[in-house]
Image (cartoon, rainbow, N blue to C red; front, side, top):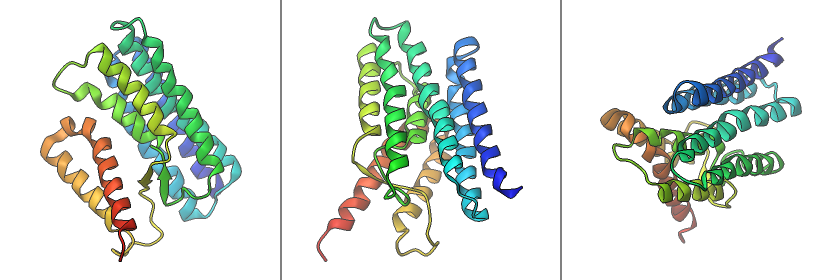
Length: 219
């Protein structure tokens, strides 16, 4: 019975993503961020539960990718499409988000080296970055939105090495940059509230870059 628990959590993630897509087109596009965040919680829980219960499976891995494509690929893709449709004749550029999210997930499934460090921006992080743009206090123009779509898509399939919040152990040594990222992100959110969310992923990119620079410095 316990082997089905992670898959159930994954299905909840998928259901939240599907419902989020429906809400984007029928109720309010700005609500997308809340569905992405809820799906992110279950995306974390399914992997965490699979490790704790020691019930990892090839089926679960494939199901997880399908759920992630829905919640963190198609949902932000349709979010940006709906936003850009009223602003630009080139709104179809937002489709790149869905395409590159699928490429990112396919690469991740075939790469065994991404357990504790990511190559390229993870799809949940990209989805949070895009859908949280609604919290900005200023309006984004057509060209900026189009550039964001292209840059975020390229980040998904880049070889940029980024921190993964996954722990082999909980000691300080070896995890210091993860703890710095988590503590500083929580502090920023407590101070700036929701307005920090659009800057959370760029902040994550900076911390990850600093950790990489520190790692390659000569001893």
